[in-house]
Image (cartoon, rainbow, N blue to C red; front, side, top):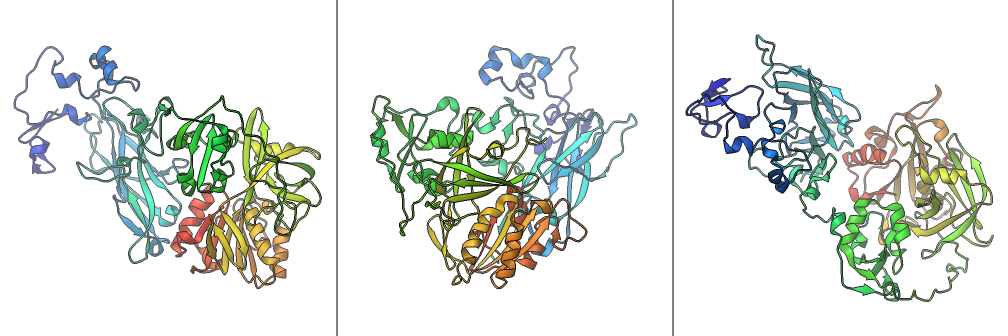
Length: 627
């Protein structure tokens, strides 16, 4: 125990305990008495009110009321004395910025510190840039030596030289420490009544911003700021962390947000009820009601906010969307939907008279197979293996005279009942309305693996289909629609491009090929395309022969380049690794008002490989679109 009158060589400040303070190495600050006046030695544990009603870590299920009725404050096993292990990132600092273009090929030196209690030794400090999937050892700098008894009481500093390029696509930098008892920091906090002792990994968020001078920078955001200073991602409604076993801490406290809408035990109720016929009248884009589990929602104001585009909602306007909604939405989406709740279905009302499903035709009189309001049954007429895990699925339309009725760039829903559960997935065919009587898909079967023990439900189901089997489809849906001669729509808004950069990962090639095919088949369309196709191995480059043929036939309009990430032959003449800034510089059209980049592939490729590098090269967000 130390009686201290100075801190870091200077007289104690009043808020730090002037004139003298009691210091207990390895203990929490709450046990180190400030403004010390006298010391009393007593034969029993102090009965001071704050000794019992502060500095306790109660079990997470204990509420304020239960803590009193159950006498929890006086149970000695919950006292908080020794420090638990913790670490901090000091650099990059909060709101520090780093130029992307000027530092992309350089290193940034991260610094910080860590400590633990009980005189234990900090043995290592690690950082992660991929949400804890991999950890990197830092270099430790021990300013102080242990005591004669081998006790470590002081902070340990660390540094790590991080490649700035590793920050591209990185959403957070994590830091954690370990001590010689193999204690480390958990990923998420455990909620407790006093909010004490939470030592989860230290997380700094990374934002890609643009300065007033137009320079793209990384901006770093710490969890909180010291003292009463405002700022920090944890202080925002959206930044509240997940608590172990309790979900978002904001929900535990009973607060409400739009994103978290309502708790499941606080679902809104209404005295209003609507007949099915009344709901059916609200079936236009400017007046959209839907039914989910006998509850009525007015989704009109949500249309432009829906990440899946307006079509995904309007396709069910005026009707029961329970099956479709439950098949593709998460619990979070279900909570969000509650904001638009207006009443319940009058179960005594009769269903509106079912109208005969009208056969749809286009302006030329062609019969359309797809109907946005009704499911249509297609029959499997052929299936061709393309690679070890990919196949071409050929479906017959209702008659040999039908065309699909899918605008270029849009996709459709394939629906199936799998193990008693309705499964709905979006797919883009490689064929178009120019192909009469059939529609073809290139599909990758996601089979069970260590990361996804069940594999992909729909892709495996489709893989099991045989000639003659039937499949329900519905559409079209999607935000993007190519018209002609560089004109296209995004959510109904007119756009124009004279040049398209395209990035496709795996089966993400299908929407890119669909748009490219429409441009190339029209001699009068002078839109130019540069396509990067990324896969793991060469055998995954689906439809490569067609792409290569296009490059030879239309050299003035179409360029193709491939990149493999996992394995390649000695004579492989294209790129290897992952999509990056240099690849984009070499093969893409430069940024311009009439240059758009279309992307389709795994989220990690889009978020980490594409968007940050496109930003760094000056491609505006408004000129980037992800299918």
